[in-house]
Length: 413
Image (cartoon, rainbow, N blue to C red; front, top):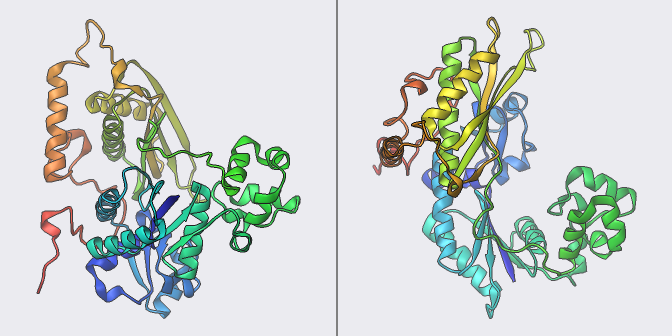
């Protein structure tokens, strides 16, 4: 058996751990700049608040029904995710962290996997306060479906076999992992309406609709394991750091600060994966929804003369690219940095007459990262990243970062 452990309404559940008064009340968590609803409690779902709904469209509904509206607290959610993963890892020898709130667990050889799953669920709830649902199946795809049904039915833990035709028939084809809306439309045209139809359809027909990827999903529904566990995530080919601004930005200096911050964050991701970037792209754009304002979007790309993970060097090049595409007199909504064509750091090869890869520079960068890891991002940063950062994204209703900031620890009264 493979189990999928999925945290229920994860962002909302994290907030409720430290604010028990929110239990049983409708709660939504908003995206960057308090734009859209990205997490909803069950009570908020019952009110008809759709996933991804722009807040300005549901604001009246929220006010009328006493919905608690919170800004995203990514520092808290990331730390709570690590705590949940550490508990899950104590039960199984092999697991794959699939996303911030989902993990696959390999239960091969376990005598009673359903009983173990119930124990895991209870322990995670007791030790972290986060409720989870666990779906079990002989393949990843079936465990995903079982998890979905466990959430809807309130069972908490549910096992599914390929022979469970009644359960498969309850799942719309668009809800099958790896299908989605576009493939779902094509499948419905040939009479495939639910997971059962997909499981019993001829392989050749499925392959003609969605290629080998959809055929792999089809075989997984039949109990043939095609997707293996990935304990170590595959290295990314590119990595991006980008955010929408909290308010329109018009000055080059503010854009340079933002791009410098994004460049440092992107380098942090690359260094954690032991990779090097062979190129960089910087992009910026105005607000396309403001049709009353001039529109502009552009990007610039540069190939490094040697692969690098040096944030200082990346920041210098990012600012140079930004200056080459910046246009005065415009109100910019978003900018970002993409590090391109990542390769393993084992392939590092410094230039003979350059100082980019010097040991002193590397020691300095490592020391800065240690300071940030110990005391926070506001304590150690490059001057190019700025101090005030008035362009930062809007999070007017963010709760305290209870577990990652000394100044925001929970207080018992």
